[in-house]
Image (cartoon, rainbow, N blue to C red; front, side, top):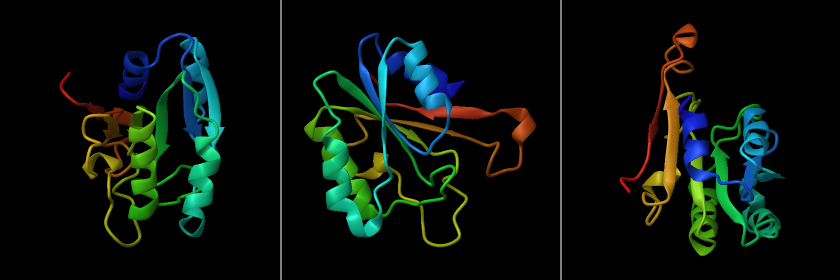
Length: 152
């Protein structure tokens, strides 16, 4: 529900939304349901950050308003490093995009520490975090989730 509410708050009919592919099937279907056009972006691998961000940047138009991000990614399990997150933050700031950060798997890591794009300079004002308890605390039937957004 937090994801749906965040998307309803950020997306207007006619907007364009970028979302990860592969990713949660709700991203494209809810985007279409809100009257927006969606386009998929491919995950950016650590050794291909510059080329991947440039490729995804080509999909941004003046109508693009939201970039949906998911790390660790479902279903690939990719955890994006700080370099990739900084590139994503630069892209969001350069094109004045909202970043909808789906962090439901943030505590399911096999090494290292999770870094949210929200923590990067200039991103707290343009990032909405979606998270919950169902995945990391084995509370799937409870459907407890939450969102964190800037005070507007």
